[in-house]
Amino acid sequence: GFALGDSNLNLKPLIKVDDKYYCFSTYLLSRNRFLLAADLLKRADETYFENNFLGNINSYSRDNYNERKARALFEKMLPSVQFFTSLNYRIKDENDVDKLTELDILGVSKNAIYIIEVKAGTLHKKHKRGALKGLKDRIEQVIGYGAFQCQRAETHILNLGIFEYVEG
Image (tube, rainbow, N blue to C red; front, top):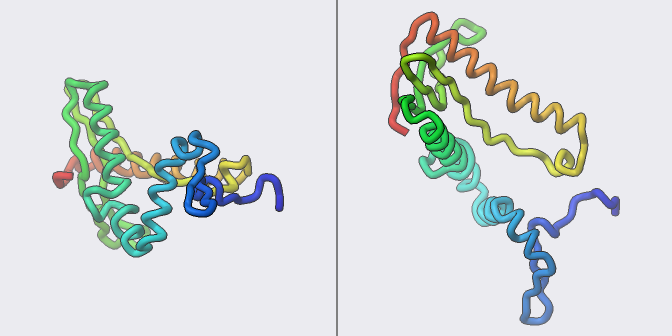
């Protein structure tokens, strides 16, 4: 196959010979531990993976974990700022219909507000191998949407200033 093609080595770094297992690169095990864990979850139960690991339905999901960690880091960097997570607010969509949306993290201090959207976008294998156009498009998509969400929240704060706090 193509030298930069997909390989099972990243997801299956152990080789079984007779009744013994061999690992020729402990580096791969260490570097890919989260990818391996996610793949094991997905292969064991795809419904659980989609509903509980991805997204933010489950409080222990990847997205909620990332939001908690981001908040904790910002609280360490900015101890005088009060941070809130999972702030819901209503907007009008493109069809002028009410829609409930959420801001991941809002920091409030005497001198500033911090509007933070946490993204857990994943890169496709081809992007990790150097498909630059696709990588650029994916990064623009993830970061661009996060920037759009922050701008939308800022507009809401400046116009109405009303959020509903949901402990998360």
